[in-house]
Figure 1 (tube, rainbow, N blue to C red):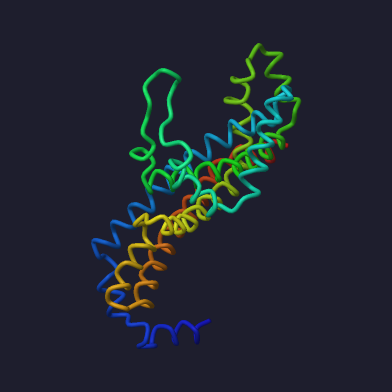
Figure 2: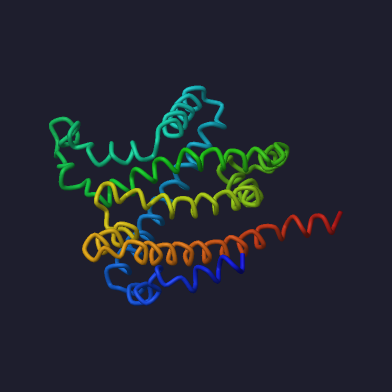
Length: 251
């Protein structure tokens, strides 16, 4: 590993001077901020949608279980790139949406490339977060929910105050991994001309032909953000594991 690192550091063909000059380029920083915006918004859709889908999967209502299962089956079974292209071209199927005999919304104006990327990545992420959340909730002893019901708590109160806080110990690690994965997957938004981090680098090297240095610049920023997210994951896991540690000590 040391030999490889030394080889990379001393290889002049990497053009480290060019890497340094473009690392904080305004175009690169703009792409970085757009990447973060897409990741945060899509992950928010994924977490909220995943929670709703998980609750539907765990519902006693057969119709809700069927709808949730169908959603997860579809979005996990089709490539995210195909979904992204579909949302980008949705206006070809529905130029306008709205209530019958009511106001109509022009999808050509609403579904911009960035919005299409957020919707496509967010809806896809919801399918995976649904399974993660369902696994976390299912890992909690069913008797705790029954005890909460006996104390007069509603199902919503039981989920909020008893089940979900404990389920977070199971949910946090894969959710953090999904967030890191989504950060990197956001690079495919370049196919619909979203000027995120990778596409910003591509636009620059399409002009100056310095392909490798610009790809290194993008990689450095991806690694930096991934490192920050991994550090945050560590502290979140430690925070939510406190209850388990105390319980073991009392036992």
